[in-house]
Length: 68
Image 1 (tube, rainbow, N blue to C red):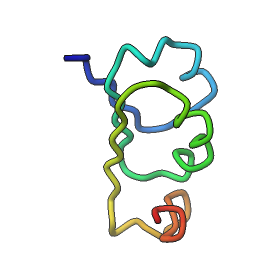
Image 2 (cartoon, rainbow, N blue to C red; image 1 turned 180 degrees about the vertical axis):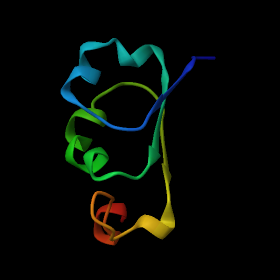
Image 3 (cartoon, rainbow, N blue to C red; image 1 turned 45 degrees about the horizontal axis):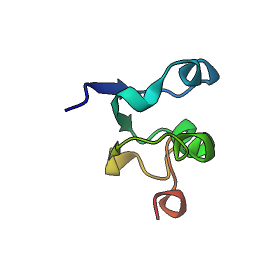
């Protein structure tokens, strides 16, 4: 089983790592997860998103449309 890498905020520097060695979790549902989704989805590994539903449609977090 792969080790888990918990990610709260996504930045360009994240992609400097060999991320396919990890199971990736993205925490809280911040807007940067959607912004970087085109790059995130290209990583050949399992990804899990843990979204705080009470923060949907709050500035800095995902919108309901982005979650869909």
